Image 1 (tube, rainbow, N blue to C red):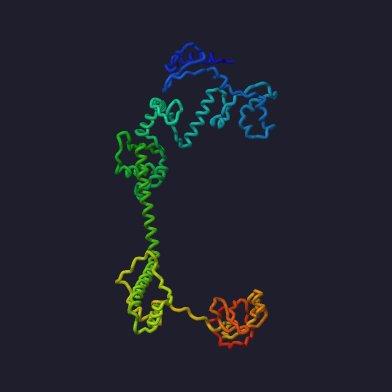
Image 2: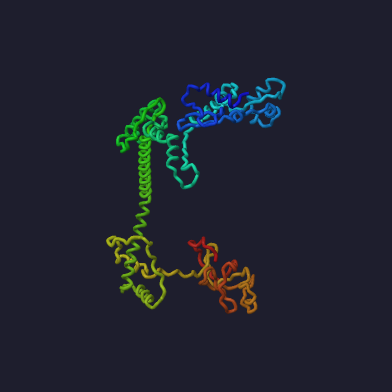
Length: 466
């Protein structure tokens, strides 16, 4: 079993000719400490706990718990597959062995080889897994820099920051990205992303000619190169399967792509808006014509209010009624925001006046509401008033009306003399009093002879009985 002193002595013997390995300069001398000159500076290592820290051993009795015949957790059995295979190679289990648990690399799992449980193997295994992850991913590194060594907020130590920037090689990385080819894309991915930068008819659009399409796109993209600093280049280089791009050419391609996409979106929107407007052009024109006619009529109304037509007595009487204070409903006004019509396009006021005179219309007031009809329709016949109907319920329902004899009781026959001015009501004569009764409170007596039936009214065959 090794110790920290023997481990340090082996390192010094193996790397005695290396300029990176240095001896400790501080006193007292400690055989367990050695120093290495790194790029960022000199670092001392204390190997007192090296061996114990890296001795990840598990006794065989603990490993045997995860044997598949006695363990219900198949995943745990899979993790200790190599150790269980070596443990159960013999019959005596457990027998005092110790296993060092190390991760199994992807290559060893494919080959079926048992991994060697050493620190070097652990390092190679983790490195292999890291490289496989980097190949199948697009990593983005974030470098964190401490502003000061005292861990105080709002304190910026220039020396500490400069030392970290030098150690992390930030300037070298930026210069490499500016002058080298930090970006790469497969030919198919490159053409799919930037194909709109070249004329569509010139692209081959086949896998065999993918490199030619990439060159064509780059040639058109570099026809008008942007102004760049001396440290940034627009260089690119083709590979066997990839196209390698500098940071400058990548930004230029992205700017051109964004510009083309914005122009295309504007063109699509303009085309759709034009098509939609042409589709609704007829409706818009008709609506505009109606607004123009309405504007001319309003102009005529203002002139008619001051100059009543002498040939139209109806208009004169309506104007007099307005002057005496009779309330009239105003004409509807045009929609707010509608521009005034062109005077040249207004309708002729004389034609409008002649038309209104012909039909007996008044421009100042709307036509009166037609009076209620003096008959009802039952089936296909018109029945005039008076009519005999039966009460389906008491009206009114309060007891006060019943005491004075003004209540119509359910089942009582009543005489309907006409339609009421109230909506949905009929006039009923009862004890010399006229009552306005809702029509749903009564039903018409079949074969009623109270009213004089009129000839069949074909135009009102579908009217509702009221």
